[in-house]
Length: 258
Figure (cartoon, rainbow, N blue to C red):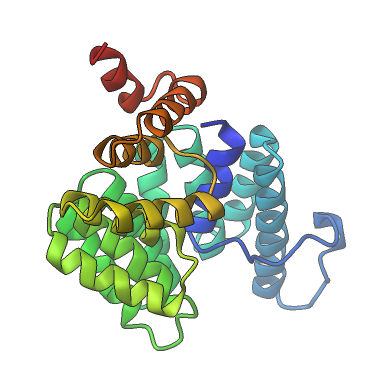
């Protein structure tokens, strides 16, 4: 997947797509008498600039601004979250983990911060620990996007092989947000495993209408079409997979099948 797609997906998954936009540079931080307030304002502006540069793919500039934000305030939660996304996008997973964890430590009851760390832990295979953070996220009465944590929780349960529990959680997520792409794909995978191929196809198609192509989604689509006897549809998925994600584990699996 192109890096800009990785960054966009990570920003959305990390619940930080709506950080305040940058209206000015650091030099225009409002000057107040309280030094702590001045530092917080500077950290906020540098974080917003860092996210802006990250979304533009200007990673060196983004890292510079985010590190500067943490110099002004080492406990600025949003800076830890955005820099974690940056490190995840360049596959520096130890540093990504460090900053996701720190954000969750700084806001132990924060819905977004616990969801972010739970999602990251799940990508690293720490399924049980991830669920603890999703539970914390959903316990936050002020968390504005519980469907996101439910979707991530359900997808993680699917990866852990807990399909019955996962299906229940994913349907809860979709009841809150029918356009939760991650939940749609995970539920499609579960239905495929249960042999309900027509419904699985419908969920994959809904995912495709909402999200950027992904290797795992293309492979699932291919497998569904094969089960439905649609050889041409399966071949089209295979072509897209090999063309767009030639280095993915799914493409390697496809090549090994001859």
